[in-house]
Every structure is written in structure tokens, then in C-alpha cells.
Length: 391
Image (tube, rainbow, N blue to C red):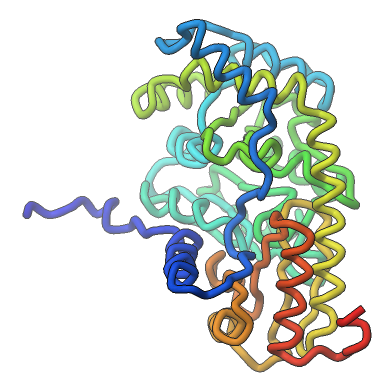
């Protein structure tokens, strides 16, 4: 066989899906597994969103799109939430994850640097390595609630820095950056001529700290590129739909690159997205209430396991407990949880070396599953408070 490219050699499968496949095989063999490993909402896509897609299909909207209903909905939602109205040239519609590659590809050359949080969603580093751009991890420290410190980011910037990536609320830690931190990073990037790529996949899923976006600081006209997704907010992971807003010259090139890769997002899927943005507010509010209950149950239960501590996540769908007090590595704890308790977790190392000593639990499953999963972990690892556990 002819050799592959050097870029192809840098590609790896996502640990999340590989581990999930392993767990599903165990389940098929008869094991009763509680799933905390995959960031997948347990809800189905709301009916009004599905109905909008079906209606578009029945109208014959199965060709190249010339519609702008989703663009209009995005513009209106941005104005309502963030206080500015993006121009048509600033908005690009595509699967949200695609912007992580395309924005960096259009903003950085081989040998340039991109600052990413650590621990972080692994795709950030992967898309950098694929195009010979150097990912520069900056620690999001537990003592700071896993929030990036703007001073640490500033210290990591060099003349080769082209992009700073932030993710708030954060996967895997659930951290939500404060308004002051977000503004400081926005001003830093604007002053230094660096793009600020703000991954806002979980923007609507905040429990304690109000969400702040750098897009509200500069209107995505100078440095900020805001990326949003329908996947987690509206239980639309399989629809592969999102959008980006950024400086028009950059987004023009991002759009052209996406045209080469995916052409366009199907019009019936865009109609579903428009329905989500214009009619989904009440549904999302109910989901947030449910996720907060699950979060509280998970964090309280983890606190009763010897050697485990957990910073309460302020947003997203994940708890990221510190398990160093157990004397186990992340991988050992995950294996023990699976074998002893039939509970599937992810090791913190799935999110980079900075994740060692932690595991990730996704609480997007039902409250009953959250309670049962925590009870199993307590029994397997020895809860400190038997009465509290059983109560």
C-alpha cells in the first residue's frame, strides 16, 4: 500500500467513543452498566424541532439551500442574548466541531501556536497537530475552580501565538469563566492581534455562574470567534448542526473552506435549527433544572467516597472529581469502577496529561441512573456515611 501523509499519521480515534464501544460489548454480554462516560443527553430531540425538519422534507427542501431562516434566527438570538447584531458575512452555519479545524486552519500557519486549556476537549490539540500547528496547554487549575487565569494565558503568549481557545462552560470540568476573566482575555487577544476562539457548546447550560461570552465585548468584529452547537442544548447530537460568528474576513475564508469539505448543511436540518432557536426556550429551561438536580446528587454522593473530592461544576454536563486520595491513577479508578461497580466513567487523561488524577462523569442520564450509579460507586469504594448513602 502507498504510504500515508504525515498529517494522517497524527490522527487518533477519540478515547470517549472507543471506551463506550468496549462498554457496550460488556453490556451486550449481560452486564448492567450505568453510563457516565459519554456526553449524550438522555432526552430525545423535542417534537417541534423534528416536526420542522419533517415539514421541510415534505415541502421538498432536499436540494442546495438558498434559505436564510436559520441565519435570521441566529442573528435574532445573538442580539437578544449578547446585545449585538452580527452581519450576514459574520455568520457561518456548519457542524460546530468543524469550526475547531477550519478556524485554526484559516488563522494559523504550520509552526504557529494555539493556546488551549488543560485539561480540555481532545479535539483542540488534535486539529492543531494535524496541520503542524503547536498546541500550547495552559493549566486550568483546580484551586481556581478549573477556570483559565488570564494572567497564565498572557504569560504563555509568544510572537507565534495565533489563536487562544477557551471553553466555558467547560468539557470536562464544568467550569464557567467569570465576566471579568472573559473580558480580560478578550482585551488581551484584541491588543495582541490574536484570535479568541470561544467554544460555547454549553452556553445555555449554566447552574450557578452566569454565562459570559467574549462575543459581547467586541461583537465578533475584532478578535472573537464564537462557536455554538445545537447538540447538547437541544438534544440534537445526531443532527450535526452548529454555527460560528466571527470577524467577516476570517469567516469568509472559513465558509469557503467548509464549502470544499461539506458543501452546505441540508435545508431541512437548518429548518430544525431555526425551530430550536425560536421555540425551544421553555424546553431548555426545564432541561437545565433537571441537570442541576442531577449535578447536585452526583457531587453530594462523590463527597462520601473516601479519597474523592469534587469541585461543584457551575455548568455543562460533567463532574470532574479528584481521585488522587484513593491512591489510584485515573485509568485504575475507571477500571475498578467498571469491574467492581458496573459503572462506566472516563479517565481524566482522555482530556490530556493534565487530567491525571481525575475522572469525568457525565450526568446527562436520568436522576435515577445518577443516584444508582453513585450508590454503586459508594458500595464499591466504601462510602464514609452509610446512613447518608442509604437515605
